[in-house]
Amino acid sequence: MTRILTVPTQPIEGQKPGTSGLRKKTRIFMGPHYLENFTQSVFDAIGGVQGKMLVLGGDGRYFNDRAVQVILRMAAANGAGRVVVGQGGLLSTPAASNLIRKLGADGGIILSASHNPGGIDEDFGMKFNGANGGPAPESVTDLIYARTQDLTEYHIFETADLDLSVIGESVMGDMAVEIVDPVADYAQLMGDLFDFEQIRNLFIGGFRMRVDAMHAVTGPYAKAILEEILGAPKGTVVNGTPSPDFGGGHPDPNPVWAKDLMEVMFSDNAPDFGAASDGDGDRNMIVGRGIYVTPSDSLAVLAANAHLAPAYAKGLAGIARSMPTSRAADRVAAKLGIECHETPTGWKFFGNLLDAGRVTICGEESAGTGSDHVREKDGLWAVLLWLNILARRIEPVQQIMSAHWAEYGRNYYSRHDYEAIPSERANALIQRLRDIAGDLPGQQFQGLTVESADDFAYLDPVDGSSSKGQGLRIGFSDGSRVVLRLSGTGTEGATLRVYLERYEADPTRHDLPVDEALAPVIAAAEEIALIREFTGRDAPDVTT
Ligand code: G1P
Ligand code: ZN
Image (cartoon, rainbow, N blue to C red; front, side, top):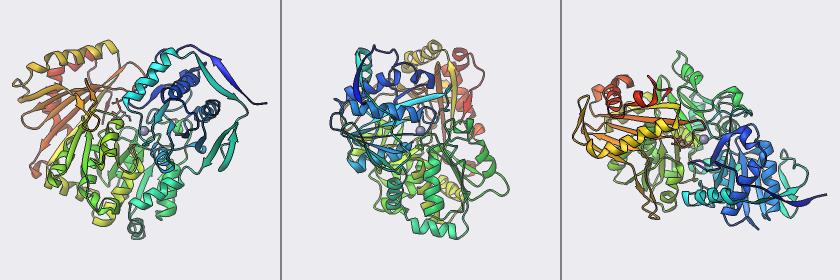
């Protein structure tokens, strides 16, 4: 017996989607009506799903499989026409974005808490992407949130679970369900963008790399594309099988959490190139033999060299970076004579610029890089673009970086995170900076003179929408900069992020230890923002 149930419910507090959808502790998502309420709110907020086509999948974390079954039953009960699901309920975020665009779907639901750990006591998340394949803009997430506040019922189909392990078509009530290979379409897209022949030759020539998939969703994609299609030796991809708790690890590709990869890349028998990706496959970490490439530098190098890959051979329309990302990419844009945009944190702000053809490449300091091929950041895409560049330039990463800095100057950069601090203290720190920002220009701190200070507000040049209160920017006359903002993705208390940057034009000073190069900027940030006093902490929890 199958039937549609209409279940009376009540609004649930706190279902406010942030920059990347709704993220909560897994047990909260598993609580009574929680997932159902949010799903119904999403459906209602987008004007219902009657007759629509949706893409559905997630990063394989704990509860992914159950949530997919619930969402399918709710989509069927709400009259959806077709849902395309990745086999096993899996889809990386960029692959989901590609599928939405390629199939002309009305949108998609991605289940992930990105780089946050997975497990019953860790994090879960759900995000809605629109027909352009990108994260829902604020206007839509506001509607979703508003709907969570007045929801009184949800609809769900009562039926047995669908077997998601077999590729093919089936039905749930009147709704078609198509289970697809999560990798195939994405692999094809990558083959269209990059010179696979040249990359294959690189591996034939003995080039070696190591990809740490961190037990997350990138594993199957990286194995298929690098090892099977491009001929990298078996074993190039490590930790390549997605597990519900990511092997007990923290699938965040940075030098702290991808420590094993860093050790290998800095050892005597390091391969030529190393990379890692996060839970849902949209972030990347790039590391050469003996050299870590910051995401801000990676964006700049990719932009400067993108023309070496077939898809970008005609050049770039423009570059966009999130506000806290270092300004290394701006120098490349200036030299290329193309548009350069500074947007608030979060990939969704790139969507309009990409849709309007104003920019081709985008990036964030938080290990996100991507282009107009999808509407999400894309970890493996960044790795493949690097490979394409390496295959053309035949130079070690170290040499590519030195040459880049010699040409453009080096933007030393670091981010300091203070995690799980009481929200009222974090808010007070930011509020105080807002209050004093107007008085800072002209003042000196640790020998640095403040040139400008504001709370970043963004006016979208495409749709004219504005986003205020996006973070404090303090610029100094020597080109250094400090940015302070509160994280929008944390699940416990507040996370204060302090972004530190210093520009150095002199090539004889491009080999300084980062901490040494940034020391005056770090000290000035402390003197201006009184971070110790407000947070009660002596040092950041995480430095990347
Ligand atoms: C963080 C990153 C941001 C990224 C977001 C989603 O947000 O800083 O660049 O877009 O995760 O992956 P935050 O926690 O800083 O708000
Ligand atoms: Zn992610």
